Image 1 (cartoon, helix red, strand yellow):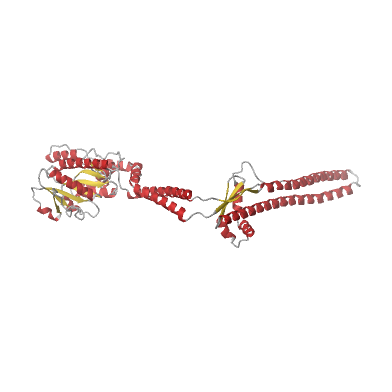
Image 2 (cartoon, one colour; image 1 turned 90 degrees about the vertical axis):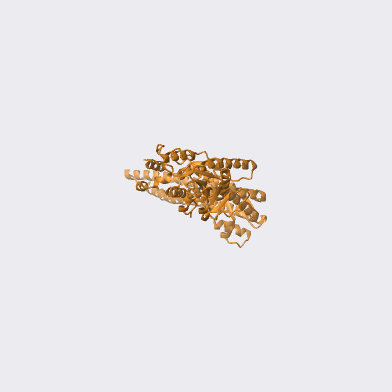
Length: 505
């Protein structure tokens, strides 16, 4: 029943915990802040080492025959496209007398439409004078090309209208000839035919007049359009400010680096799936978080706070170790902090009797440590058999990948896990809890190293033997047969164990 309930709650959990994601990204601030700083430095270096070339700008007022108040900018975008053609580039180079290829020259200039009729041309060169000359030649070439196109369009339209007029004048001449021949005839049929000819002559005359007027109007607007297309802002060199350019490029690099760093941190957090919140670590290990220790800090007031937290943790662990069963400390990602905790605990227990620390850490960090006056005796795992039964044993080991799981039971029959937040993945925390359960080593609590200071989640499991002090009382009562069995909530890894496997256990 408990397994199914846990499985249902796990299945109902969201695929992405935004709170855990925000906390994990904030904890990786060194990554994204470093990338932001790198972007700032790269942007500034680009501005200093690769300064922008000399640049000149010119503004051209462009008049269009099809101008409309509601034009969305299609006409000026067409002008920008026409400016980026080899015909305009070739004319500008011809006026400059330059042997440069038009295709290469087109890479050195660009244009943008400021309004529906105002075009800004930007040209680069080897010097300010060359850039200004290039901009002037390009603006003049564009104006000449635009005026030529306007004239050609007006001439083509007028010619088409005049051709239509001439064709109709020919038809009118034929109608007049037919009227002259029919006027000498008499009879009703001749009269009807003559009336039809007069009607055709009137219609042709009207259409000829209309085409003549339209041909004249086609040329009337052309001078106005030609006069309206002109260079309104003469080419001038753009003054480049190195500090301003460096600041702009640095700000752009800073923003891009920050965005990229945040994206990398977020993706890495989701892929790695490393729990950082108390509730996640407690749920994955099936044990409550009984204490927390922040990282070392150079600030004096924080060092006092850390020292006070270590003293409270030492007193709490000393009370746990006062039971008949020995307690071990198993670390995950924080061997140094675990060593310090073990030494503090051994010193506290030394007041009640001799204490021996059994060092099972990788590299024998405690056994190879140079002892100080008053430090407890430290032996390696091989020398644990020679420890006297009258001496208290405090085992210190690791549950990192590569651990010899069967050796952990010799360090202690109960254990306190010392885990660094965000170090182990959820899958590995499940593995640790499962392996300890296989070795019949109950986890009486978790000491969280380097927790997130803004974490407000609850790391206590309120039911089961996973809470430290109450769990110890219930375990003693259960062993004596006086305790009532509770409905315990299994850790998250237990929800993945098949029913047959649980029954076999």
